[in-house]
Structures are given as structure tokens and as C-alpha cells.
Image (cartoon, rainbow over all chains, first blue to last red; front, side, top):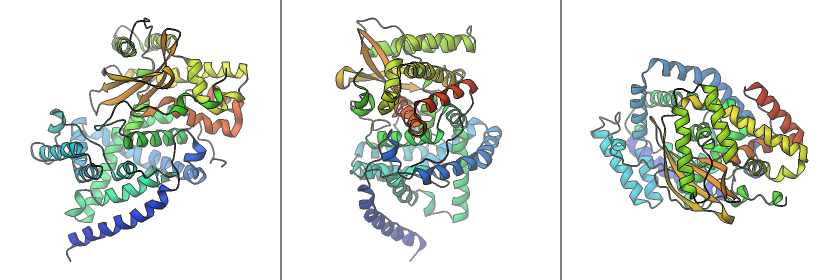
Length: 260
Length: 207
């Protein structure tokens, strides 16, 4: 069996096993944003991990990203961003198909073909210039689309905010990236490092602002993560946006404050 | 995931984006006109940083309903506040939003705001949808939740890339309220406003 076949077979087994694990996750109840007791039952575990990740970021990743940002011109950073975004094509395409979204799947395919050829291997982004929308679908969203709840909020060491559903999604999607098929591990892992640093460099100002403006940084990131993921699953934002969906009633008419 | 951080950081621009609306104006027109007025202030080379903040703050006061925002943010904890505490909270929240997001305004001004539609919500509220086009990076979706006060639309929430400011604040304040009640939250906000620096991360949750 060639390594490629082995990888493909491993993925099938992995997905099958995860599907079983999901049924358990689905019954774990929804992680609703705004209600910390319900959405974050593992807070006492999550907070220390969050602090660890944050310290790691402040002392290791952020300084490196600052140096990277200082040395590399924005133009080159843009190429790197485009290159890695292009490699997500199999993930996006597969999950568009799994969510029965042929329109978005076609957009994703068109982007990949244009950017890989005219965009010289993905470093350019002619698709965006031609106004081809960029769908954002992953396996976590696919699970949500088919009714799997997010389960409890979970902070992963190194990887950051997640929930049960998205952790499963992350594992499945990582097996579906472009590079694992044809490059040796030492290339893919150094590429992974470059991708992380490049991504971090894009958000230097934003992370700094959020850190400084939050009263409770942990709770702020948690709420933002859960809200954002729910919005993506329900297609309230992004390329496959469906307008006209009513917002959370409890948020705008909290029952305990009705009487004045 | 990272783009939500960005959209949170961008909340000041839309939040400050409300100004007087005529009674006959549709919510969409109201948001469009006021967004444009905010951008005019942000782009005005004659105005310094402080002058811009003063002007934006005046708009914010006039066109958003801070009483309602405070009530929504405090939610189930609202009843624990006595009248004096409620009053102080409204003032502190106002100050918190203008100072913490205010220092970021110099980064903005090149954006283009397009109203893309709107929808009526439950019990007379209305949500206006806009797209924020930036010089670099993908477009952002920003929604404004409005509630009618008399014949005037007032802003009660800003939702950037699916992230509601009210929900985010409720989540942050809820942890503090759960641990220490109204006095603790007021103290944290007083200190935060005075320092203008990041608050200490609370110790691991009690539950």
C-alpha cells in the first residue's frame, strides 16, 4: 500500500470513528453564547489553559510575529496569506458539498482554479478581484448544519478557543488539507509554522486592542468565538449569507428586566 | 476565527455612527446617513484626535439608548442593582465604551459603509444590515439593532461579523457579577476607566 492510499484509508477510519463520538457530543447540549454556566461548564479547566496560551502568545508567538511583520513588506505577507488560503480549497469544497451547497462549492472550485493558474500557484488572488465570493465552510459547520450541537466550550492547548463540535471538525479538516498529500513531514511542519506566524502577524493590532479593551479577556474571547461560530453555522455571515434571520430573543428581551 | 477579533475592534466606528433621525426616515436611511456623517468626522484632517472623540461621543449620546443597552447587558443581574447603582452603571458603561474603543479611531476612516438591507424584529425592533469595505482584507458584515423610542429610532446593539456587542459585554460582566455582585462590577469598571489599561484576568472561575 502506498503512503497515499494509507493516508486515505486512515482518514476514512478516522471520520467513521469520529462520527460515532459525535452522537455523544450532540447530546451534550448546546453552548449558547452569553450564558456562561450553560456554555462553559469546564471553565475551571479552560481558564488555566487560556492563560497558558495567552502567556505563550505574549512571550513567544507575538514577538516573532512582530519581527516578521517588521521585516516582510505587506505585499509579500499578502502573497503568503493568499498561498495558504488557497491550500484550504479541499476543505472548503468538501464541506460545501457535504452541506448540499452546490453554488458555494462551485465558487470554491472556481477560486482554486483561477488562483492556482492565473494567480501563479496561489500567491495571487485574481478570484477576489473578479468578485468571486470566498465561501468559508469547515467540518465543524457541516456538523452544525446537520443538527449536531456545539457541546461545551473548550480551550485547546496551543490551538485556542473551540468547542466539542469544532474540535472534531478541526481533526477531520486537518486530514483534508492540500499539503499532506505530496510533501514530506518536515516541509509541511515548517509551512505550518510560517502559516501560524503569518496569520498572527495579520492580527497584531486587533488582538492588542481586544486584550486592552476587555474587562474579562477570557469571557470576551469565549463569547466572541461561540457567537461567531453560531453565525457561521446558521449562515448569518459570510459568502453563503442568508439575510432575514431573526436574532436571539432572550438577548434583546431578557425576561427578568421587563418590568420597569 | 481571527476575523471576529477584528470585528470586535471595529465596533467603535458603527457604534458611534448614530445621529438625529427625522421621524419619516426609514431605519436604513437613518443608518446610512449617520454612517456617512461618522466617516466625514473620521476623515476630517482639520480635527485632532480629541476633537473627533468629542464629536463622535456627542453623536453616540444623542442616538443610542444607553438605559436599554445597560438593561440588556446586565440582564438577570439588573434587579440586583439599586437606583443609584443603575445610574452609575449607565455612566460607567458609557465612559468605558468611549475610552476603550475611542483610542482606536485613528486607525479608521478609509472604510466604505454600504447599507445592504434590513429586517423587522420581534416587538417592533429593526435590524439594519451593512457591509464595511476596508482597504485591505475581506469585507465585514456589520448589523445595527434599533429600537423605537417615541418616534425616534435609537441604537441598542451593534453586531460585527455575527458578534453582538451586548452579548459580549453581558458575558464579560456576568462572570464578575456572579462572583462579586453589583459593587464588584462597578469597582472593576471604575478602575478600568481610570487606568485605560487592561484589567487583570480574574482568577479561575468558581464553578
